[in-house]
Amino acid sequence: VQLQASGGGLVQAGGSLRLSCAASGFRLESYGIAWFRQAPGKEREGVSYIRGGSGQTYYADSVKGRFTISRDYAKNTVYLQMNSLKPEDTAVYYCARGRPVASAWLMSNMYGYWGQGTLVTVSS
Image (cartoon, rainbow, N blue to C red):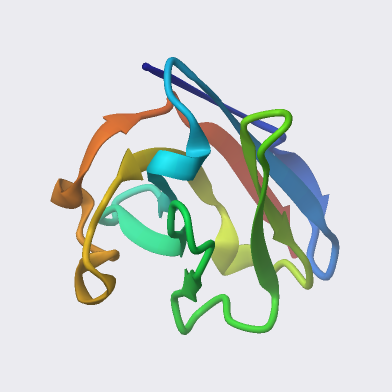
């Protein structure tokens, strides 16, 4: 099982980025994928989650209406489209695989596999 996160970079406030999480060793139909982020000096926090199978999506309040999670079965890849970026979105973003119940998707210990992280920097 491997998760390869990519797409981070430097962007001005108000700009957009699209992160990708390429999965290998398993099929997205069977597992959910979450995006977490960790800013310097802060704890890791859940950003968004897409459930395996149903494709139901979940978002942290801080990103609702700005971020969109999606997946491409053919490419076995999950995306995080980030619009209207703010300086407080600056963090290392990680994708992770798991099968949490809906009420637990924000809990990082619900995920057994993690990607290596990709840095997003939003300048003011």
